[in-house]
Image (tube, rainbow, N blue to C red; front, side, top):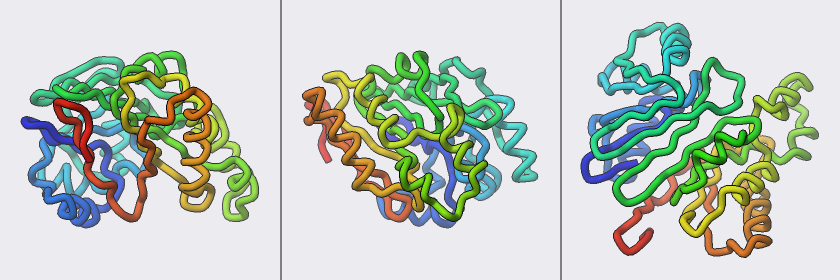
Length: 249
């Protein structure tokens, strides 16, 4: 995300080369990024940190348990700016609020990012939405929300052992489409303008299933005006801006 004064990357799960290529598609470079916010230490969220954080010396914002886990896994030292989970801090003209989420990592967190023109909620790895999570993201203008799997596809998946399926389905695993739809329903307000569905499993979900579940639940609430889009691992989403008179694609 970016504002007039700040350019921030949330997590760095792709390789440094892939991140550079994807930023180039929207006219940006890694060198222009001022900060990388890290939700937790799982590989699909930190793979590019060696190239970005270590080589380019981009500051990495995370809590202490996450720093310890990241530097152990990557076998490198990073320029980490440590915060306590639940605290807030400032990056340029952006205020970043942090809060705990239930996931099987050392100290996983979500973000509420308050920029001059919009508030962005970010929760991509959690087994269920606690009251605290719902409270923190309730006034989002833009929400990035996990819709990881379709339960039926996950149960039928032949590549994953039952122990992994149990982990994914647990309260410290990942949100299914229906659970994501319920989160969207519980936090919906007139302020919510854009909803990105993220962290979709390539094997155990389909964009049409995720979109169908969320749109059906929002339609039941009379909230059909929310623009819902699936984020893809293959291509960047189109950039989306929030202007003085509202959003403009």
